[in-house]
Image 1 (cartoon, helix red, strand yellow):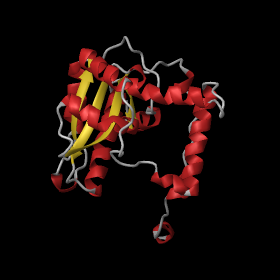
Image 2: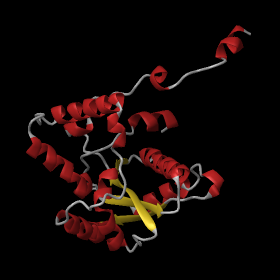
Image 3: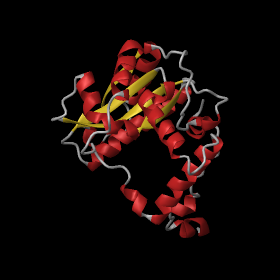
Image 4: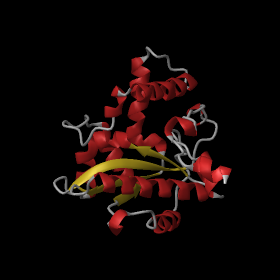
Length: 227
């Protein structure tokens, strides 16, 4: 698989094949390559714990009995105040729930589906990502590039993923379970890993992205082209 195929075939998978495990050898191979992701000042701020089998099930059973923590670990929804961001959020939500035949007013079904995040949509492995609280915005960016590198390498292996900021609702419980200090570390997200359920509608709805011109400007190329 080339990079283009990996980028275009990657999507957030919300229905996995629960009985198809992911081997430790494969995950080690992916993570060994991903450590070469860009890292400002070579800080390499990313840290993670990968769970599968009995430990993952035990954590999920624990989370099912929890309520979201207060205060939040961090806020990811602030951009909703920007009209175009709110519209993009609403558009992808409408596409996803429509595919599952869940009406806009069916709040119970929408809530039930959102809570499926706790089970990581039946993924057989989940990477829990966290890092030192002293890391600033540039290092958050580095962690994002590391995670994107992992997701593309997973596609090369025929695997799929779903980054789950939702898991930050239970950050302290997760850190306590995996033995990470809440005082020293902030939890960023889970990354569900497995094989997609190809026939499930939630993995096949049409997504939209802004055209390049909607977010990017080009300057100075007119002179280059003319020359």
